[in-house]
Image (tube, rainbow, N blue to C red; front, side, top):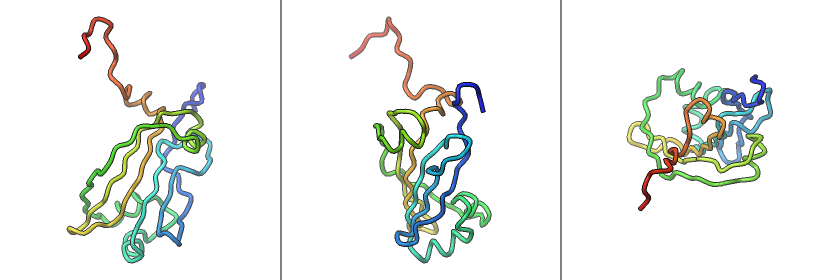
Length: 137
């Protein structure tokens, strides 16, 4: 990790919640802080079909099967949350989104993701720089 403790790790799985057919990632403590917190909700049949290795992340399962998907982003979020602050080991605000994955013209699952603000180190700032000479409306 880097000296600032700002290392962002890969997707981390903590298993499934069988009662809700949900797959959650990012909540498990590891040596690195997760880049993303994510949860997904599936029908029982789709979960059995596409999540053949329930201990692996969703993307590993879908990539292994070459599943063709369409992502329909339904909402983008920006805000703070104490539990996510604990997971990311820093306060927000956080960017998040939820979307539906469609497969063969049918909804396959709903995914909710929240992004670690430390990703700005790799991707750049989430807000444009303010130019002191710039006029505002």
